[in-house]
Image (tube, rainbow, N blue to C red; front, side, top):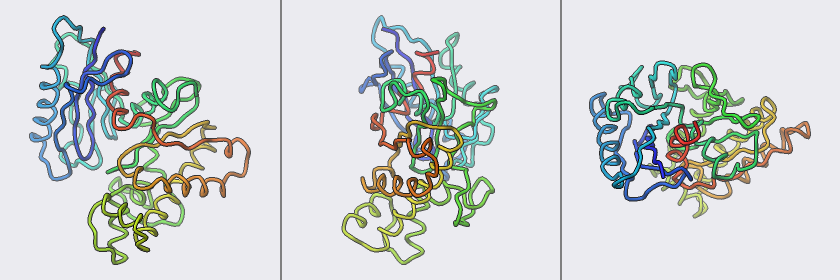
Length: 304
């Protein structure tokens, strides 16, 4: 059975693993390293090389390596294979595809935005099986997404289609790292939701602590996560009206803060669903747990 090396590069970590043609991640091949806004370019490059090399070293004897699929936080330039992850300022126009090509001479290496990879994975083996018009979404350090319309992935000419984290949501004026104001990511990502709660007087410092405070009934924590859900609902109602979506599958660490987050999203969307074609969309948690980004990156090789 052919295997793909999958690499997922994000604002908090880079992860690599071997993935089979059914989308299953080989657990013994999975390695990760931190990234983050404070890392310099060489540290980031070494982290990528380190996890990829360790994953490749676990290739079973006699197994075929079919290629490398890369999902990266955006924006990206898919033609030349460059990445400029918003939350990783040391990399602007970094040649990530070329970097990984040096590890596997002669094999295909394909790059797409991580949000699209997650969407491909949901369509292939996750919550979106059998659904041809869907958005996959991640709510974590950042807010990202990708689109499949008419059964086909839609990367756009530069690879950045589906970048829902940088849709402006009405009623918010937070500045965003992209240079915009009121972007969904600036309002509803995990770190930005924590920042808002701290400005209101909450004493914690992490998304995990905020989730625990929400469950304990802390009023500021509840207000913060409700605010996050409302912003997500606004953006997703607009995206559904634009793209006639049937399903939205949401993953990422902060999407698991509380199951009630999905209730808030759905209620916000329902209040804005003026047409039946908007009201029809289903919003569900990702069915892939933490494997979605790697499975989606591998799909760039296995599915072509």
